[in-house]
Length: 190
Image (cartoon, rainbow, N blue to C red; front, side, top):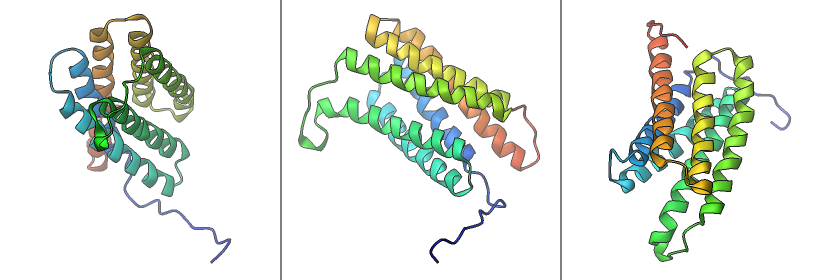
């Protein structure tokens, strides 16, 4: 009915764990690639699309239904970032049979810099939410974006940026596990 207000179902399970697992797996493997630990960029792109992209976007949309604007916005936009970043990396090799010119270092630097600024703006909001590990994951996410921007703009160490990205992934995986454990009565610090 038009104009009807829908009451959100607060008894439904939170999809946040799935979103954190998506971020965690994608960032962990991206970090390992950038550190030179694993050589397979295609596997990392697959993780970025399926876990970083699909899992985070689905979690974001489910959180939207639950009325969680912060979680919905964060998971959805960062899930879409994984899709965009994957496309930028796949387009030059001929995705959809139409090879495109690779993005320039300055374009990629500005791309990741702007995402770092948005992540930092959201980090400020995490301080009001009161979950220390949420703030930690956002701080290392900020550092991930800014370190990537520096890689593209001034040739900063990709290995160090990869290590920061790996830390982001590990913290996100920890949060995912802590959220699942909390549902079954095992308390981990959040």
